[in-house]
Image (cartoon, rainbow, N blue to C red; front, side, top):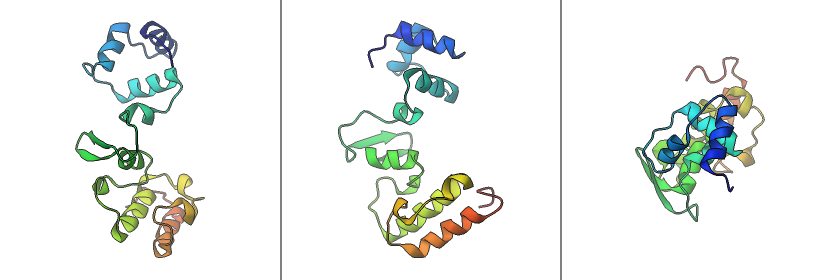
Length: 148
């Protein structure tokens, strides 16, 4: 997207979350912190997902990345952002325990309405049907993901 600071600043102003041109320049240089409201407003103004702004620019999902407290691959980080991968497994080889933990993470991290329609094919580690019952049970709970 060929959008200059001035145009982006105008879009943010129209959204009710003004960030001046100097602030945008500092954000891009890593000299200004961004809170969640800024992140969402920037994503809306740019027409992208907030997740896109959080991911480092890499050429491949296997490229190594570092985020605060996490060292792994770009694919690992995206999996965590998408609520597919527990942070404890980022940068570690996949294993049977990962599948169980990932399914529990999905069941605990996502709202009930988001997991009700999931199929086995959409879960990590397809073929581990013994864990599918656990996520299905959590999806049916009346209290959603409030009790852990």
